[in-house]
Image (cartoon, rainbow, N blue to C red; front, side, top):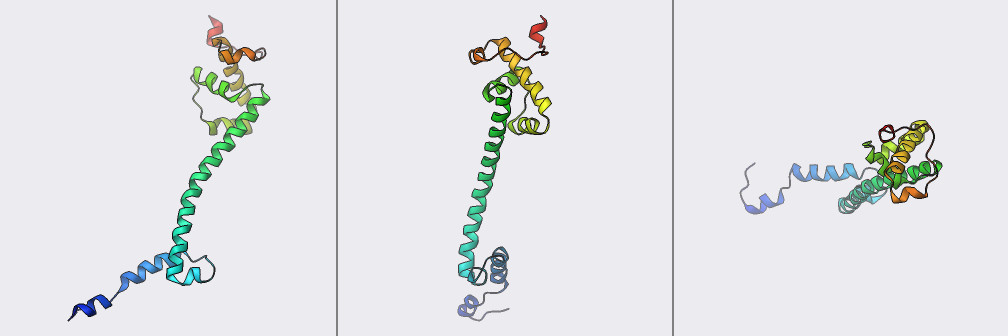
Length: 149
């Protein structure tokens, strides 16, 4: 298309505007009222919704981390143990499990978690950590390498 003056060139918008608006209208399709039909209102609502979605993804990660901590604390209290001591004992035994794995074990495989807790407990007691002095006797039937020497 040939434009004979600059006025006609600036007036022609063309398909770019259509597709730009269509992208926004697709994102606002589930909104109610003029927020889905009127472009100037829809674009504000879409930008706001995208900001909330970004914040929501971060909050979801934080919520899951808090849930794992609560589950681990409860599981450790069942075995008369604290989570920091469990983490310290497992790291001294070179058992590197994260919070999610440990909380899944505590829920779905309580015997495996009990074995890990007793292993960590005996390792902490063997190394003589200051926090471990307040604990009761170690569980029966746990043997570590340090005990075999």
